[in-house]
Every structure is written in structure tokens, then in C-alpha cells.
Length: 500
Image 1 (tube, rainbow, N blue to C red):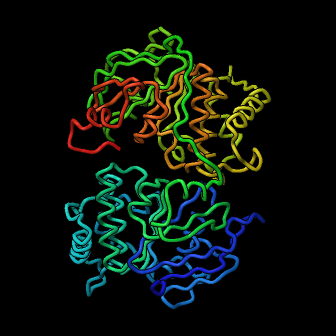
Image 2: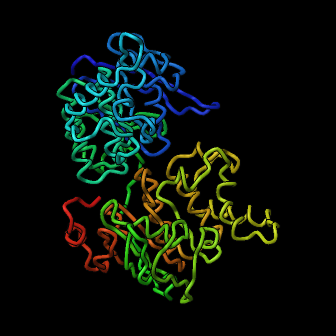
């Protein structure tokens, strides 16, 4: 193996006496993609934050391009070629693309003013290098889709002559076409000699783009080596230490119609949406990003207005004007973005699980706290949620356990109609199979579940029926017995994009 650009040896890190990294070694080589995988809570985020200087290791050695980098600051890391692109992209929305690319390294004129023309030229040059020259560098970066914001962040690393690029879950909200575009960029960066760390829960991506892989479990490396020496099941076994079944599905008794939507429409988003969801079934909604899937869910829940159509809850026509009203009718939403819309990260686990129950159970300002606390605690535990104690801040839980608390919040409020928008986005393979088992159990208990997913395998494995949306309309329905990737894709590819 070539001399590593970056070398970590014996890295240890603890928080409040709890060891989260234990004797971790990692070498990054120029021109290689080194994939780091593991369950949520395995230590991946802590490791990359040590590499980027955001956290300081307790013990070990760290050398970057021959220099001692142990316990150096984030600024030192950036100045010496470490660029980190987190899942929540670090941008300034109000600034232009060019200004974001040069942020912290602005070009000045002789009079000390910012040289806008030179910054624009640099931005255009680096975007051209990665094949993203269709991006207007003078527009506010907030105008761009997330995938293009990701490209701008990568361009910024090129503009600063980066040596190491860390990509943390870069494809979480990408379409298949955008993933392909990103992989093309990564391969170009490899040829330029960058050492790349790639973190993802999607094992297909790991095997497509990776040269080497390191697997973390409970803060310890369980295996590390050339990606070609492993199969998918090998990686899963090293991650979770047990066999994983992602195809788990249970047959259940189908009951009454709990949710019926007729001719629902919202101008510019979707139109003529009609479907029903019965007790004891999971109805999946697939399609393209931007097809209107999440917008329909928001309309049903009263988050956004509905212009046309009817919503029936248990056969009764109803007007839902707010999520609070929806909760009182037994509807609960697990939002696509749990961190921004489903949780209050700085508050305790039990408090987060109580929020929906408070909305539904309060009467004339009185809240039955004792009863609700017990019910919420029971809901959390019924989902096998792992947490140190109920008062720990939820931000310290893994992504999978955070997602379970959002589930528990809906169960504690006794919702019997669940709208799950991307229920396993951003969770590891172990947590994913646990969530699937929970969904199937809830279905057998008589819940009516509407599941929106960008994961084709998830739709096929978990749904009793699949609705496919395109351009704001439902263009087909496929029963489980007839559902295949080809059939879903055939419906979804009425436009020249790829299903995600």
C-alpha cells in the first residue's frame, strides 16, 4: 500500500466516562475511497469529527501528510487540506454559490474590497472540474437542490486544495441520477489524488464506489480491508454480529377503511389524489423525488392547505386544519426530517415522547402527567428503544433510536392511522430491521399505515399495496402479489428520471 496521506493509530475517545472509540486505526491513501460503515452509535460520527478537529481524541496518534495533527483545531485541519461535508451541509443560504465556495478565503482587491469577479471565476473553474458547470455561481445557494448544494461543498474543497475529503451520508436525499453524478465526481477526485472517506448506510453504494472498507461496532474496528474481499452479508455480520432479515412481512386481517382520500388537490403540488387505507394494512407510496408524495401527507395532516377534495376518517368527512386536529382524530405523522420536524433535540427522551399525547389529552389546560408519562414510557419500551435513562437528551441517541421515539410519540397518543414518511431514512441496517418488525406488529394490531418511501426494496418488502406517483398524480396501484421492481419502475419512469 502507498504511504498514507492520513494515519490514525490507537485513537480513543470517551464522553462522560463512556468509551465511544477504542483503539481505532485508520489509514487514508491518495486516490482511494475508504468506506467507513457501522450501526448508528458505532462511533462513525465521533471518528470523522476527530479527523476534522471538531473533537479531540483522548489518546492515540494522528499524522496528516507527515505533520503531527493530534488535537489540532478545525481551522488547522482545513488549512492543511481536510474538508468535511456533513449530511447537514455547511452552507450560508443567503450567500451566492461563488461566495460559499470562497468562504473564509475571500479574494480581495488592492483596496481591500472583496473581488467578486475573481471569486466567480474560481467558482466556475472548480465546478467545471467536477462536471457541475451548469450551476449559476451568482445565484443564492439556497436556490439549489440539496444534490447541487453538495456539489458546491465538494467544489469548495477543490478550491482550497484539499488533500482529504470526508463525505458523511452524502446521498441521503439523492435521486438515482444524482447518486450517479456524485460517483462520477468522486472518481474524478480520485484521479486528482484526493484521499476520500465515504460514510453510508447503503451497502450497494459501498461496493460500487469503495476501494477499502472499515467496519465499526461499539467503537471498535471489527474488520478492515479491500472491499473486493467481502460480500454484503459479511459486512452486515461485522456491523451487527447477527443475521439480518430485511424482507420480514406478516399477513394480517384487513379491517375497515380508516383513511379515505377522494380527489385531493393542492394547486402546483398534486391533484385528484384518491386512495384508501384499511386497518391492518400498509399502503406504500413510491415515485420520484418531487412527485408530490410528502406534500400529500402534509395536506392530510393539516400542515399545508388543501384546495380540493375530501378526507374521510372512519367514513366521516372531516376538515383537518392543523396537526393538532389530526392527532385528536387519531392521525399521526412520522415526518421525513425527524431532527427538524419530529424531535426537540435538546430535550429529554421521555419529554419528546410526550408531546403528541399532551396535545391530544389536555382538557381545559389540565394535563394528566402521571398517566401520560407511564403511557409514553410503555410506548418507548414496546419498540425496544435503547436509551440510558428517560431524562437523557434525545440528541445523544443513535438515529435508529431517535426514530423509534418518534414512533413512540404517535403510539402514546393512541394514533390508529400512521403516516410514515421515509421511516428508515438515515438509520443503519440493524435498526432498519427492528423498525420493519415494529411496523408489521403494529399492522397486525390493526393500525392503518400509509408509508412513503424512496427505497424501492422497502416498498416491495413492507407494503401490502403500492401506489406510484408521478408529477403530482397517482398513476398506478400494484398489489403485493404482483409487485416487482420492473413494474414499479415502469410506472415511475413516465418521466426521464430515475426512481429513488
